View 1 (cartoon, helix red, strand yellow):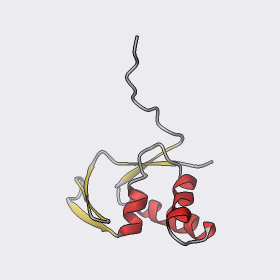
View 2: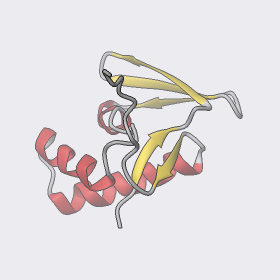
View 3: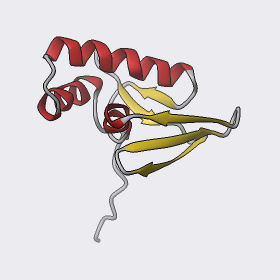
Length: 100
């Protein structure tokens, strides 16, 4: 079963160029992500599964599917351990305005 990473509500971030700066409000610690980390971070929206993110990595960068999957999972687990993201068991329902 795949999981869907989502940025924690206890964080704020800004992307500057190809890199992201993230602050964790719980410990006031700043994290600096490189280009690949930012690519992954931008897809942590509760809508993209880990497998989908890894697949996007193989399309964007010249990396094998196996390497992308392993590295992506390892990186996302580190972000979760630091409290920067949480895991959803499935895609979150999108908030759409309905017309009645």
